[in-house]
Image 1: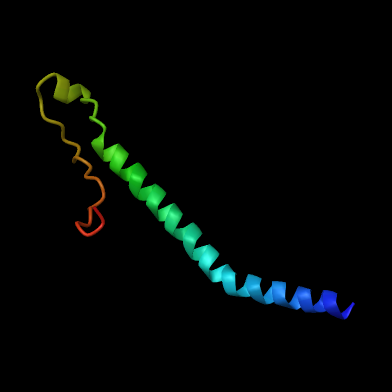
Image 2 (image 1 turned 30 degrees about the horizontal axis):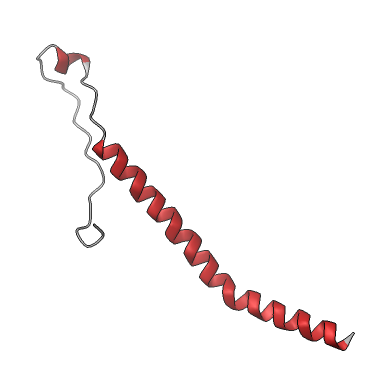
Length: 73
């Protein structure tokens, strides 16, 4: 019984030490996925709106994608 409790304590401490690293890794992967999706959306050619296809100007402001950090590319 004592040996089982020792293993249980060691396993619990290991889990407590590794938990912040695991959460940080999951957060980094989520951010990378969001950046990759934003880059794909920015690279896709925009479909012309009805006023642009007729040669007129649209009164709606154009949307700009997220700013890109030169250090991340």
